[in-house]
Length: 415
Image 1 (tube, rainbow, N blue to C red):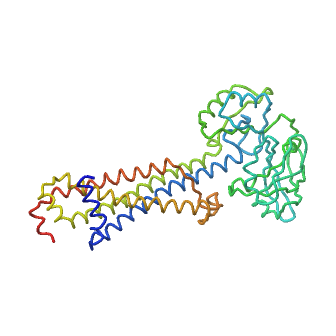
Image 2: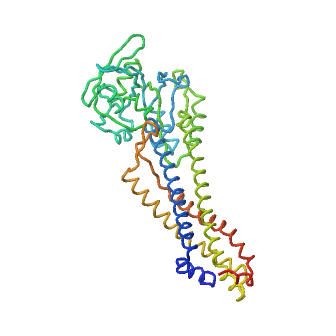
Image 3: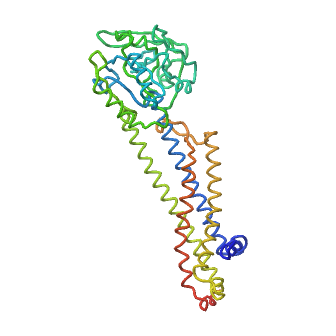
C-alpha cells in the first residue's frame, strides 16, 4: 500500500465521520452514486425485459418469419399458398438456424351469442403447431390437440373475448362466415387464454386447421402461411433476406408466388415504438450519471477545502501536487466503491423482489404486460458498473486540480 492510498483509507475510515461538513457530504455523495447506479441498472433490466416480453408475445402468436402468398392483402382474408412436405423438409435441411416450421390457416368471422356479437379471426392449426406459448397462458380449461384431418369442433378463446361474449369453458358458440353465402359453424370452448397482448387477444380464436380448410374449400396442402421459428442466435434480417431471395423468384407449383416477411416487417409500428425505448434508456443513464457525478464532485470539493491544512502540511513535508491529488483520488475511489456496492445490492434486491413477486403492477391494456418485466443480462450489468467507475473517477480528476493552487504558507490561515 503506497502513502496516497494509506492516507486516503485513514481519512475514509475515521477522519470523515468526525467532520461536521465532510460527513454529510460523503453520505450524500455515496448515496447519490448508489441511487444513480441502481436506477441505471434497473432501467436497463426493465427496458430489455419489456422489449423481450413484447417480442415473445408477438412471435408467440406467429413466428419470426412468415411465408405467405405474394398477393395476400393486409387484411386477415388472405389467398392460400400450397405447402408440401418436401418444401418443409427443404427448409429444415438447408437452414440449420430454423428450429421449427408450422402451417396455419386464417379465416375472419363473426362470433355471436345471446349477449353480444364481435368480429374475430379463427386461426386453424394442426398437430405440427407449437402450442407451448398458448399452453403457458391458459387460464381455464385446457389446450386441446388440434387435427388437420378431421373436425374437432374445439376452440380456445381469449379471456377478453370470453368476458365480452359471456362465454365459459364448455359453452357452445356459433361463428358466422360470409363468402358466397353466409355459413355457420358451432364450436365448443375448451380453453381460455390470456396473453395481455390486447391487439391479438381481442380477435384470435384457435381452432383445428381441417375445419377452416373445408370452410374455404381448400385442399389439405393449401395454407394461409408457413410460420418459421429461428434459434436465438440466428440473424433474423439475414435469414429473411436469404429466404426472400430464394422464394420470391419461384411459384408454389400452382401459379401462386411466395412472399417472405419477418416480425419486424409485419409489426413495424410496434417495433418502432420498442426502438424508441432505447433512447429513453440512454437519456436515463445520462441524467442519473450526471446527477451522481455532480453530487460526487461537490462532496470531494468540500473534503478538499476542509483538508486544506493537511494538504499544506503534506506539501511542506515534500509531497508533490501529483501525490496529494492521488490521495484524494483514492478517497474518491473508496467513496464511489462504497456507493456502487450499495447500488448493486439495492438493484439486486429490487430485481429479485419484482421478478418473483410482481409487486409493481401495470395496466396490460396499455403496456401489454400486467407487471413490470425484468430481464437480467450479466454483460449489461458489468458494463454499467465499469462505465460508472471509470467515468466517475475521470470526472473526479477535475476537483483535484484545485490542490495545485493551495500553497503551504497560505493554508495556515485555515482552521
